[in-house]
Length: 227
Image (cartoon, rainbow, N blue to C red; front, side, top):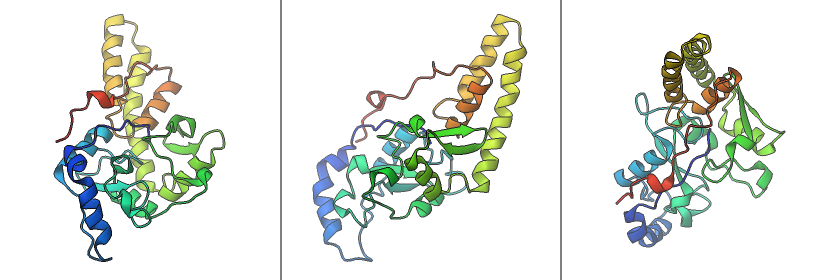
């Protein structure tokens, strides 16, 4: 998980959000329309997350499908079914694990990568993800989403770290300035925010002495407005 920036509200939500939300609230249970499942909405969410799960950072479309995440569950907050700040993109595993979880205890809320500084709560030690500064929110987020309990995630992060380490070693051992800069470009690409498991990869690169502070965070202002 890494911190994300929220983009502009899609035009369809601006124009039809209140009306469509009212229809959703009025519909009986079991037949409520999936008003958020539109190509323009999903496209805008992909821009925000880099087509990754907002929680585990997995690319899933090649092997599964992305789901629209309601940060505050629509079962408890139906009035927020189309609220742009309440929508994100996640993988089926994280969506299922989180379910309709919500609590009024602010210390136990699942971290919201759009509003929380994730780096203040979560840290990566190699492929392992742990809480930082004894953050109760991080502990509960890791527990609810099973970010540390899924073997598939651990193995996937470990493989990417192993691949990255090959480039880091070349960069470390290269005495020639021009070649070292070329290796650095490759590494920046591997740990960019758009890369899978970038949180774990950046943390590992730092342990090898590779500074990634120059990797810019995506600006919501730079995102094209979704119509």
